[in-house]
Image 1 (cartoon, rainbow, N blue to C red):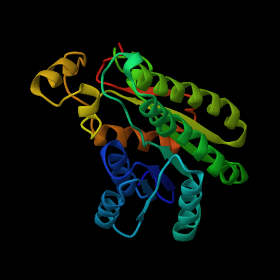
Image 2: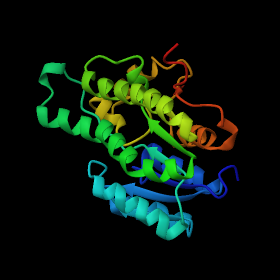
Image 3: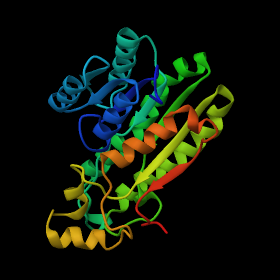
Image 4: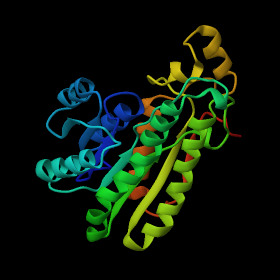
Length: 248
């Protein structure tokens, strides 16, 4: 029960890393609002976990949806302590100049602008209570970029820099901000990053991970739980690699 009495919003909490975070947070005593563009998946997770988890359909590129999530957290649970910016999208491997502008804009809106909108929405509340935690899900691609994923890599590098800047600015208000850099994981985005989900493509990716497996929701859920807990009360501005040694 390391997160007992904590109230969290998790974007993209209906599947992948986000679902892993929601499940672990719930198990550790937190109450959770799931924001997800896929309402059915979000409601399925919330329905399985029970009374302490609620779900809403949300587009993280819309400030009004963040405002609605905060309102839901206040109505259902009476407050907010933690924001997990997990929602993200990628693009298929291709030369940087071949990425369509519409896809580029979508990557930047979901992966970067959403963090700005989340901060804009929750910061007045967290500053007023002089406590809180923000965790941004970045990527090893922001530290050690893979070729032909340039604009995705760039968006995650932005997340890491934003995390550090947020941490410095918000420390005087008692608010901690950290990032998690997962290696390629067993999520719906895996096939996008590989181009196709084949044994050959998986073997190529796994060859770059010394521990020899992809990340999963439990890995990221466990890490986020620690960073959100009081056990990490002196940790801020960190971008923690959860990568099986890929970035060594």
